[in-house]
Length: 640
Image 1 (cartoon, helix red, strand yellow):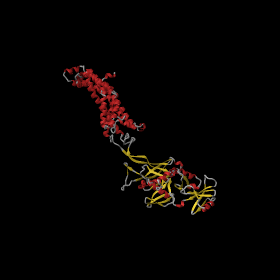
Image 2 (cartoon, rainbow, N blue to C red; image 1 turned 120 degrees about the vertical axis):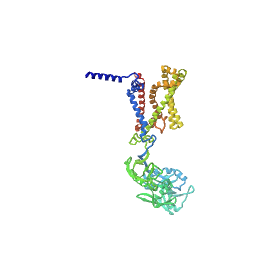
Image 3 (tube, rainbow, N blue to C red; image 1 turned 90 degrees about the vertical axis):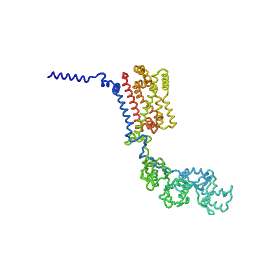
Image 4 (cartoon, helix red, strand yellow; image 1 turned 60 degrees about the vertical axis):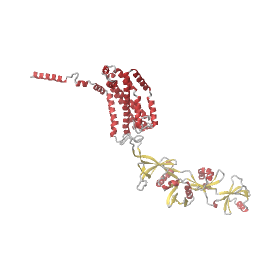
């Protein structure tokens, strides 16, 4: 029984061997020996080639499939509410007096008093420093043309220039008193009664005569017996000021009157002159204004309502055409005066609540009556000597420029408020597309020219190879730079610019392909299969492009793959220099150009250029790895 079973097993094994045994023409054996499969097996054994292939697959998915699922486009501009520090207003405590001319004073008088006007602040300082009570209230100033004027004190905040109160009417020398002739030179006798009254008053220093008061003052430039006799002319009529010099300025309650009255110096003179001379009202432009004091602050009213208050404090909005809210100014004045009273307040911050407009989409929010809606806002006052800056943290609806990476924008936004990740995806499309199209143009031109030169040889080969030599000698980068500048001058549309750039890059790069194809065809055209093709009567074009070129295809694939990286680098360089693809189309090159405008951007916005630089490096390295792998797979001898 055991022998029978053994015989059966032997027969079964023989039968199995017959079934698995292959002949040379078996399909399975032909499949194993397929050149394509051998190339593929050799390619996948190259780990760097596999790595490069994986990188390219990821890049193509990222650039061509990713935008289909990403919610933003390459030209979408993003807006949003952002908090920022705004210089809302500026304030100053006035330390110098400003002159406001009487509107009735003519230009010639103003011109003659220009010297006096320029020296008002220095004269006031002399009055404040003087120990003489009379000089503290009235100080005599002589103009350049020798006329005497008095700068009189109206209040601590205001002074006024008027004619001298006293006029020299006589000169006393020894026992003789001579009057000063008004309309002619020389002296005339004023009469015995005047002489007697003046002589008797030499020791007392003043006397009255015919209802006028006279003062006798020793002439500073004369002798011991030389005196000048002055007459007080103030009683002859109401004092008329040339100008009022003040450190206060009106803060207007009525916004609609701000522009009109804030720029009207004649109104300010009238208001100052009335306020500091004790008047309770004044009339300007046929309108009656009231004047009163509240806690030492002059208040001007109109039609029974407060119109403006006067203080040595000025505040203006950063928008100079707009008046600040009056409650805001009162709170600001209080804060500024407190800071001014404390020498250590320089550089400190004072906060208070005031009213500020709330913006929505760049426009003021309006109520149902069309009025601007206001809200409480925290303001901070910063002091620098006598200047104060008022700023606040406000919300503003604006373009999100250089927004840091966040959940909404994974890689942030760029200088135009566009999503960086979206532009990297679309930019990769352009960069890769440029690479493939340029290489395709190079292959087409190179294969045609190289195939013709290699097949025909002779004078045809010489002409084409000399043309190849010419293209080798062309300085490509200067040509491309000049072309880019020409495109800028012609102001080409960004789409036309892209097409022309790809065409020029392809046209300048075919020479290397032509030389390689020509060399391969020279070696292939003498082989047996080409003799057989010629003997069978095939046309020349068919022999070249049907039999010769396909045999050169492995070398073409390798050269095209390795050339893709170079084209991507060239395109990125041109776009980086601003000579390639233009905004709004994104490429990796022009995105790098935008971020390198200033050196500080490289550190501040590294989240933009670092991913782009890594992608360019990965793409170029991956194409080189794949090209090396294909070269070794098609020609294993290269490894040896």
